Image 1 (cartoon, rainbow, N blue to C red):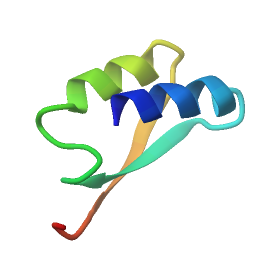
Image 2 (image 1 turned 60 degrees about the vertical axis):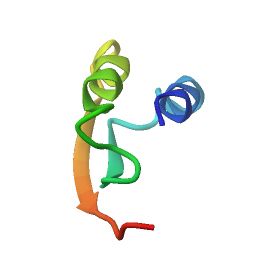
Image 3 (image 1 turned 120 degrees about the vertical axis):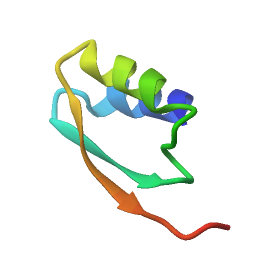
Image 4 (image 1 turned 135 degrees about the vertical axis):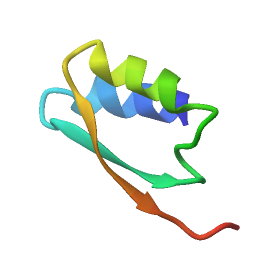
Amino acid sequence: MEERTERVFKGLGDFIDGYEYHYPNEINENNVHNIKGILSSEGKDIYCIAFGAEF
C-alpha cells in the first residue's frame, strides 16, 4: 500500500487534499506510520479510514 500511495501521490498530489483508506486491508497498525509519512511530506492527510471486510 505504501507503493500505491506514493504512485497516486506523485500523479494526483496537486489535486487531492486527503486520502481514504480501508482498514485493515489498506491501512493498519503495521503501515499507518509509513503512509502518514508519505502524505505529510507535502501537507496531505488521511481524511477517512473506512472499515473494510476481511478477505
